[in-house]
Length: 171
Image (cartoon, rainbow, N blue to C red; front, side):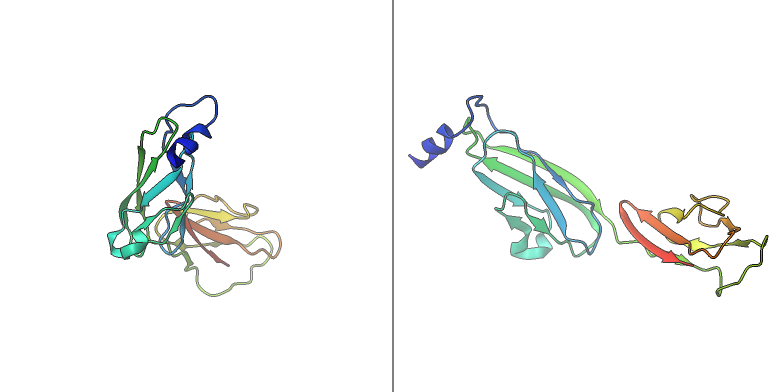
């Protein structure tokens, strides 16, 4: 009877529920958030994070769970919903690669005082896509080694982005 009651509570446009979800950026050391975007009515949720090394933390029955992965690698998260309006279970899977966070570093040497008109080449290191800010006084912002010719005292921030994981250093 409870099952029938759940089915009756569905909207008038009653069709089978379709499992779907999104997740936050996969960066090692961050807790990943999984957001259930299932369409239709689903009364029960069963998640598997594809991380058997996490033991009992590899599964959840929460609507929008969180999970922390301990190692970089490729994982497949699975959501199985049941008790949809049509009573038919549905499954959604997403595969993603969890990457170690990059380490951004500026290796231009010690702090330097520049006189008006002087310039210096910065050297940023790290695995990923580089960017510098602010753009003022820089030859480019999308390379690891721009030339800086600031007009005033300026702190530049070097950022490395590796698959959504970022790190910053400043000079």
